[in-house]
Structure formats: structure tokens, C-alpha cells
Length: 406
Image 1 (cartoon, rainbow, N blue to C red):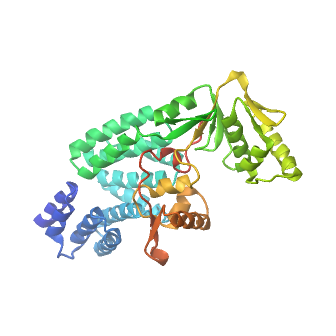
Image 2 (image 1 turned 90 degrees about the vertical axis):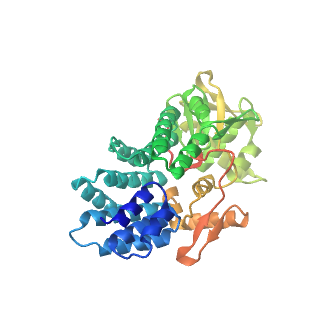
């Protein structure tokens, strides 16, 4: 390795992308192309970075498998930053295996971290947990240790384990300070600040209270009957009843819980569940059917009693009833939460992360664009969507595919 390549690599490791470019900007040999690509990625020029890294990978000879594998890892990180989540992870897995076989443990760990962070973005938390559990960050550079701890903290937060998340963020802070990389320090500071922001609202008898993540964890660990509008289900003690796939039943459960200990009129329930303001006998008959279905599902947690004007919720074991509402209502919260990370997302990546159809995402984006909540950049296949950060609260509970509460 010549002196300019070594100096450029040291500058990149310290986060000095411009200093790295000054040393190799006019060179087209494979190591210089790779370093230029990484520097352009640090500067946010992701399409150009990807092109340079692909050129470098092609230029390395067949006897330079380690260098080619490093280029694959760097390109995978650029793809993650571009929110290009549709590619196969096989090439990244193969690159990680190559690097491990050649004792390049730092870059192999980076490849595994990229794979785990991709799984987190896609909401595949069980797989992300398994991937992170296999990592061993001991003795590795502080910057990589900080990234690993940030991923561990995000997984813990999305699983609503606030204590382990705080511990992971403290370790990430220590590692980021050792690394002296400003971008890492800023990312850790933002993650730690999210712990103190409102994450949800507790609704009870017409009153509303803002909750932080540790308050949410405490509420869900209590003996209360909680209708969770963030995860779309009902929880009481250790029992969890998911209703995400049954929106009518969830709307009825939420309306009954918000009125507790009072009752809800039949007209109000029909409007909440069916979006109909002038009901007739057919709607009242349908309401009776849906109430019967809900009553059968929650019979181990609560009773639903008929009253003179409607229905009332009566929890078992004299439990308190609470509604855990997301920090914003009336919008596609998961979509806004994904877009608020500052990255430019394609509709295909958003559909993958939300586990829904691309056409559904396109319709939701069109509505949000008309309301001025998001904007598009680029055209045709290059079109991406961005949104301003959702200030004032954390988006953890709005992100899709959260772990079910056991």
C-alpha cells in the first residue's frame, strides 16, 4: 500500500472525507476507486459512491478476493443508506464469509452489522436479534463497536425493553467518544434524546396523558387492560390479543375502552367501526354480529355488556382500562415514521418495510403529498420520498412490524 492510499484510509477512518479525496481524487487504480467511493458515501453522494465501488470491485484481480469483498461490504452500506432494501443479501453474506476466512474480522463484523441493520429497517426483529446475538465486537475498532451498540439499542427499544436500551446507548456513547467521529456522536445523542421524548398517549375517560417509553413499558407491565392502538391489540397481564388484521373489531374495542367505565351508544360504535353517520337497521344488525365476535375473542380478559343505549366494557379481575394511542392520529403513522429518518425512500423499499403492497404505499404517499407532509425527489424509477423529522416525540412505537408483546 503506497503512502497516499494509507493516508487516505486514515482520513476516512477519522471521518475526514474531504481529506481522503484530496489524496486520491485523480487516481483510477482499484484501491483509489474504492477509497473515493467510500469518501463520496460519507459526503452523501450515494449514487456516485456506488458507481465507484462497483468499478473498484471489477478492477481488483481474481487473486484479490479480500479487496473485492471489502468493496461489496462498502456498496451494501451505501445501499442501506439509499434505502435500497430489495436486493438479495447473499452477496453480502458471501463477502462476510470471505473476510472471516482471511482473518479480516473488522470488515466481516461490519458486513454482519449491515445485514442486521437491514433486518431492523424491514421490521424483522426476530431475525435481527439472532444476527446481533452472533456478533462478537470485542477488540474491534471503537467506531464499529458504537454502531453495534446502536443497533442493539434500537432492537431493545422496538421490543420495549428500555433498561437494556439505555445500557446499550451508554456503551455506544463510550465507544463513539473513543472513536472521535462526530457523525457517530450525533447519532448516539439523538438516540438518547429519544428516550426522554413522548412516545405515546394514554387515554382514559376523556383525559389524555403523554407517556415516555419507560412509562409505556411500565403501563404494559401493569395489571391494566390496555387497548394498544400502536400495535393494534389488547393486553391484560401476560395475555396479548392481536387485532391488527381485524380493524373493525379493534375500532370497537378502542371505542369501548375510551368510554370506560361508561358505555358507548350504538350510533357512536357504528360510526367508529363502519364510518357511517346515518345508520339503519342493517348496520345495527352488523354491529350486533361484530360485538358478538369481539365478545368471544376477549372473554378471558373482559366482558362486553349491553346497556339501554349501547355497550360497555367490563374488565375481569377489577382491572383498570387504558388506551395507548400513538403520538399522532389520523395519518399513516408507520409511513411517516420511516420517512422521518431523513433518508430518501423508494416506494418499493417502503412497501418492503411495512409489509404491504407498493400500490397501497403510493396511494398513501399521494395523500400525504397533497397535505404537504412529504415530497418527492427525482422521476420515474429514480423517484424517492422524503419528509421532515417528526419533532417533539419519538417514532419507535410508530415503526412497523413491532415485536408482539408476550
